Length: 391
Image (cartoon, rainbow, N blue to C red; front, side, top):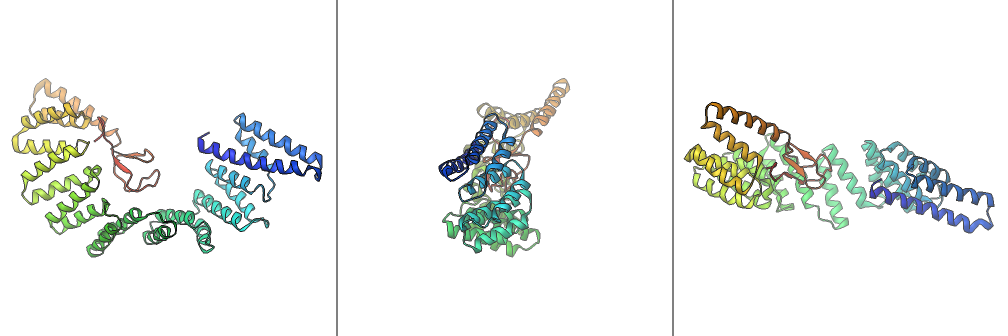
């Protein structure tokens, strides 16, 4: 069991122990046989748990956990455990039965509603979950966790306007800054406006996103793309460069566009200078490979190969070696060229099997970039993989 699972189990055992002690204190008024049965069942369930038989332990605990003001926490812990084990149906039934009890306090009922909403989320019943979380907001109970769940629902439904509304409300009641998250939601709307060929709305949304998060990368990239569409190369280059000033890890997303803009401006010297500077700031090989390509175009293949060989001694890279092999193929023939072709194929297969991007929050790996991690749903956490086998 994981550490979190163990915490749930200890919370569950604590609740049951409390019930047992209360029953023992009241033994003078209760029948001795009932107290003995409670004691036996409690330790029987504990024995199942210690012998790593959680299913049997759960059944025993369910039998002895009568719902009263002393065992509500036990039922909540059990429901949470069912949900974590992927048994959303059992969690739903347990929390529904709990809510139906007439002896719950207002706070206990609110907690049970919140738990039931999370059960519905796990089961994919988003409409039912949304109703419960909205009810909690109306009751002014557990508003912050309810809003977080509503934001999650809006993201799954891609309802960015309502997601922004909930995020602003969450920021107001919790004091937690939500500007970075709102900037991503606005960027989603700006991307949709671009796809609908509505640059005016896109520009407005981009500016609003930048106001919410001055260090945001995504709106700057969108700003650069819109400027390229209207052939405003200088503005586009400045937007992409600002994006990398905000977060240099997004070099693979912005560097090709920067080079394209500077080429349109007929500034080859600036391209080489920028790539040299970027190579010092960025730990990956993308700037080095782009610089090798510039050297090949301007000074020839031997000069580019010499440059790559020198740089790869300082910063080993599979992608860099593959590029060096490509250059050597251009100036080789006969058996030597045949061997290089085999080596190129091996490098190709090796590179294709590697994740290009990885989430720095949950470790999700992918061949393409995602603004929202498909694994943990965090925004902006998917970055290029660095190192010998990475960028």
